[in-house]
Image (spheres, rainbow, N blue to C red):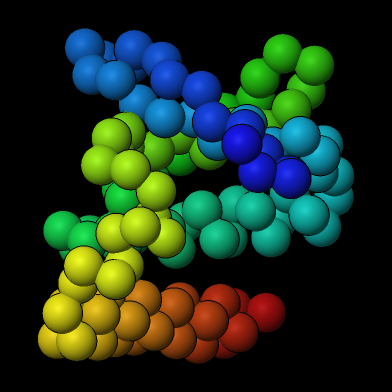
Length: 109
């Protein structure tokens, strides 16, 4: 459990998914930022990146991020097992997609 979220497991379309339930209740611009970040995460498809399916409103108005359940342990424990090439590939995938989305978003303003 983190300081801003906890993770719950649910069944969804016959698969187990993790829902990161945000403890803080975002409003206004925070919701827009969350939707943008989630849309970026949804677009990332890589074997070393946990897949994000979307967001959901939960009881009490809290927001949850629905994602693939990765039962391989903590990410902090997994990163040291990757070789340099795998780390660079994950970093490159994220940076490329993030830059592309930021550029596209800035042109839409």
